[in-house]
Length: 301
Image 1 (tube, rainbow, N blue to C red):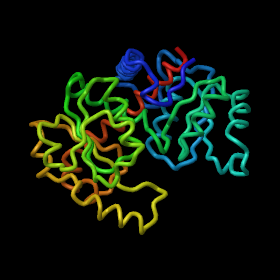
Image 2: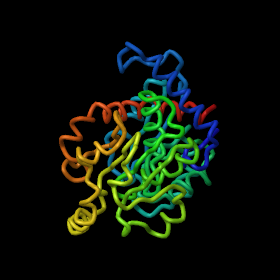
Image 3: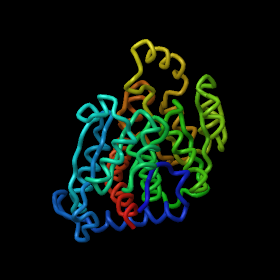
Image 4: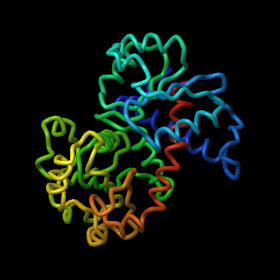
């Protein structure tokens, strides 16, 4: 049994094994309908709970479809539907859920929930997103890059904009997959916590950071908890980090642009740039399904 909580906690060879599983599972589904179950049903007789303390589109749909295709069953629930909303502790909840379920995927605004679940459960726990990291997204991004361009090892990857949970997982992945990660963000966002994990290069000026980039990654400037006033402040601070066509042209020829969506057009990315790379964004979203299936298979391997 394996937990999938943070990329930094998983051996590089095991991460590559997950990508291999994902490629095999994707190939097996060539030319069959989405509602057809996999030939090898790796989750047959397994019940998986999707516990979402935050709203979701891509994470919920990709996990539910993936679990169905693998022969498993899902229970999808928000924390408001559980005694967590009445202040039952996550540690008590974890012990109870272990009696009913074979796996939990959690999407939470408190990374400590994941720690409690893994500590007090005897079933695999998957991080579907937390305020600290988003490992499913980043592993899917690496799968997508390598599917299109080949190995990411030694490539120049530039993170542009807000320093969020996805950025944290990119920082962890850069060490595991040996790519060069350059962070380009406002200096105001460089908290002591970010500095402590920043094992990559920092370049405040996007024009310098994007030179010779093989991959540009940007993300929404806002999270669901930000107030209107906070959004306006962040918009003002991040104006110079908006991804425009002029910035894309600084990078390598045929450089990829990634955005995990939802997109706020003409904020973190100009609408014409989003349109130019939207098919890539859709491939990222599609590969969430296959890579998360690879992760679930690995958890039981």
